[in-house]
Image: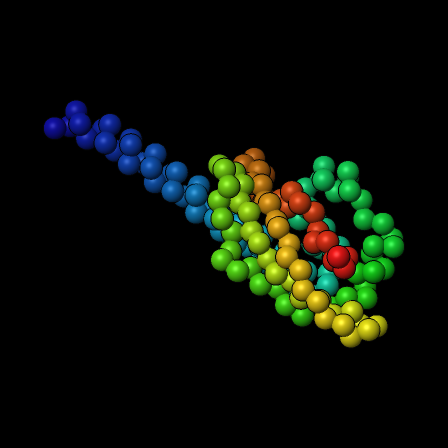
Length: 138
């Protein structure tokens, strides 16, 4: 009987540790998405930019003209819909509807932001792979 108890105990411990890692990862995702959404809602684009993948940000720098245009907008809605969906082992995607008002014209419009988030296991951090939302009118 003891012969079977040790392997069973080892498997149970490994499963429990895997579950803990999953909980840490899920908690990190929830915290990250909430903080990012808050930054967008309050128009704090410098904080929002800190969630963007460093390589993406380097390849797609925000110009001063883009920054000044963002200052003319107020986010009036940020709807995550069904929330994040897994897309591979370390990635999730999320579709967000964002409503904005131009403070100069008082014109409101909405658009959809397709987000892709990647999990870095070493840093226990989620990063936005798609950059900040494209607020420009289309």
